[in-house]
Image (tube, rainbow, N blue to C red):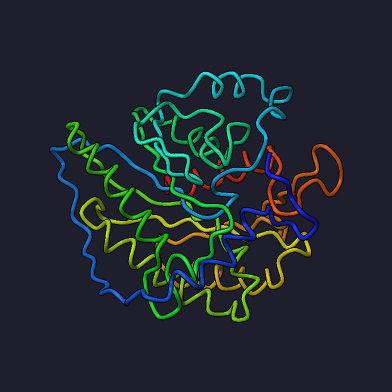
Length: 304
């Protein structure tokens, strides 16, 4: 397991955050233009859902801690849920074949991310669903995906190429992929920037670019599901600023949802950082039960 230092970052994440401003200076702004197609009532579509973000999207929650309290779920996702197939590019762990969703598709084989909870919700449908996960620990929206002025960055281009290629693969296999929505679990790295308030503009450009670049596979609507970052740690400098940006976007845009995760009110989740081995074990990532709940809640919003 990657060592987590006292400020909460792994060494890998530290290096990544230091380097990205240097490699992302040559990006250019791209045109945003999307028009969602109408559904054809004669076609049976194959629903596809995306997961993107940084380390909590990749998954740094240890699934072995679910073995005692969630026996049936633990057994199902140790074997693999064949009703929900997944492919992923997660921290350079790449699986291009669509395989049954199971534990071990996180940052390392020890971990899982929101795909488990999302798959639990999708498996309630009377059909096979698909997940494409593209994530990287420590990645920053404004320096690696899309900035406040709408300029695309290196990680955005890499992941869009992967996602579009996977959708095309389904199409070539005789499927009719319909991109229903995406779960975005990110913002921690941006909270350490000098201008965290620019997150709102950057995220809006990011979603607009997604809808444009993946327009061929979107019908009627696209559910974008966001989530607060934790304010239960002193690692992130301005979590409240990031969360306010996220909430404003959800309030201002249709088919845009934001999951509160810090117990703000009666409807909010109260997710916990990893304290499963001993207090202070990991000040950046959610424990196994919290990650499972986060994924299930995201899945419910994706199905709206």
